[in-house]
Structures are given as C-alpha cells and as structure tokens.
Length: 141
Image (cartoon, rainbow, N blue to C red; front, side, top):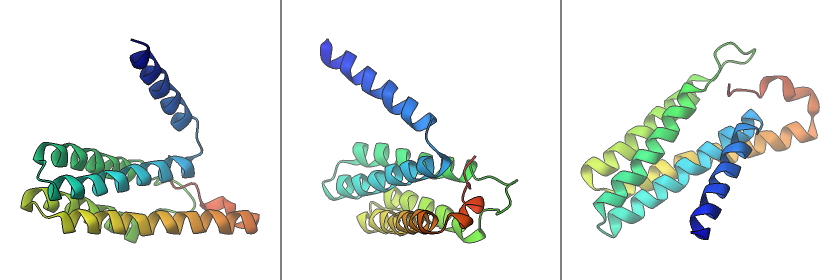
C-alpha cells in the first residue's frame, strides 16, 4: 500500500513541477518524453513486444501533438515552419515504425527529436551568456 501512495505522491509532484515550470522547461520535458517513447518503441519492436511498442508510440505521438498544439502564434517570434515540419515528420516516423514493425523508423524519430532538444539546450546556453536575446524564447504557451 505504501508503494502506491509513494507513486501517487511522486506523480502529483511531477505534475506540479511541470505545470509550474517555465515554458522552455516544459518544452524540454515533452521533448525528453517523446525521445524516451521513441527509444522504447524501437526496443519493443526489436524484442517483438507489439503491445509495448503501441503503448510507447502512442505516448510519443501524443507528446509531439501536444508540442504542436502548444506553440504560441501570438508571440513576437512565431514558431518556425521547420519546427512544425520536424514534429510532423517525427510523428510520421513513429507511426510508420508501428505500422511496418520497423525499429529503424522509431530510432530515426528519437534521433531527430534529440537533435532538436540539443538545439534548445544550446539556445538556453546562449541566453545565459547574452540576456539581451531573451525576449524571443517563449515559444510555448
């Protein structure tokens, strides 16, 4: 019983931490989740665990759709078409991985998202070095 209570407390803490995080941190958390989901999808396909592959791919696709849905359209720096295209492409790769039982497509999805995450981390580093660039970084509502 204690384990369930600990899990629920941990889930509530994670939800609160996410909800109160800065938009850029929310974006990074969703990207990390989508990357993990793609990696787990690839692993499940390789180990011939189709139920796990479908579950993980569903989580990853939902996170990518959430990233698309939360892009701000009213900011001074609108989201770039390439960011949208990347998410749509990665979503398609993960869908194709499931449909064709192809772990390589799931790996490619994870790799694309990891490059995007790394670019956001580099952007955060630039912001810390040059605070004058901060006004255009809030791309998540």
